[in-house]
Each structure stands twice: as structure tokens, then as C-alpha cells.
Image (cartoon, rainbow, N blue to C red; front, side, top):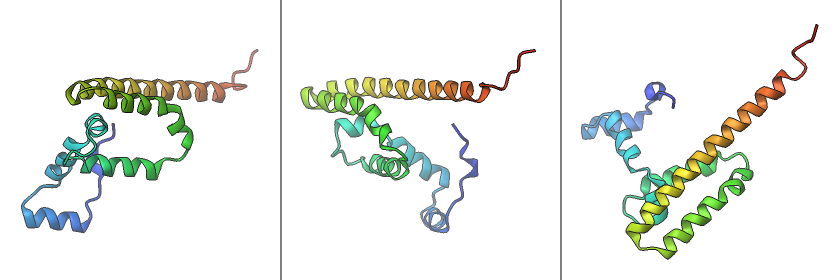
Length: 129
């Protein structure tokens, strides 16, 4: 994960922090503490959903290819099925496990893509004597 030290703080954010006695770190930490896809999927009407809505909007704006959505739709389908067929507390625990599986699948696919790209770059570069 990249460091947050290189984030540019816009003037309106600086003004809010100055006016209300906050630090940028407090503001960012408060936001980060509320990003929770498992909680959002299991209780989308939770009053603290604002950070998740912002995050999902950001994801959708930066999504370059619908193939990503199609590739991982099975996880969202499983989450929705879990939420609809379980009590809220049970659903949340199960949704967290599905989100963990989703993350693992994404990371494994990224490793596979990197390895595949590395193999493509090396094709024809090694000459036999």
C-alpha cells in the first residue's frame, strides 16, 4: 500500500480542519474507519454507509473494464444470497468471509497476470549460444 504522505490537501479541506480544529489525519482516519464493504453489503441502510457509498462511487468512476465486474460478480451474488437468507449478525460474519475470499481471488489473479506479463516480456529475449 502506498504511503499517504504525498496527498495534496485542497484548500476547502484545510479550511474545514482549521475551522473545526481537526487535523487532516483525523479526517482521513475517520473516513477510513467507516469503509467496510461487508457491513455495507449486509446493511446498506446503516447510517454510517456514507464512506462506503463514496468508495463504491470512486471504484465505478475508475473502473476501466466491465470484465472486472463480470469476473467477480459471483462474490456479489453470494453476498446478496447470504444477506437475504440469514439473520443480520450471522449474515455479517458470513459476508466478511466472502469479502476475504474475494480479496484473495483478486490478489491471486493479479499475481497470475504479473507472472503472465513477465513471461511475455522474456519471450525471445534469451538467446541460446
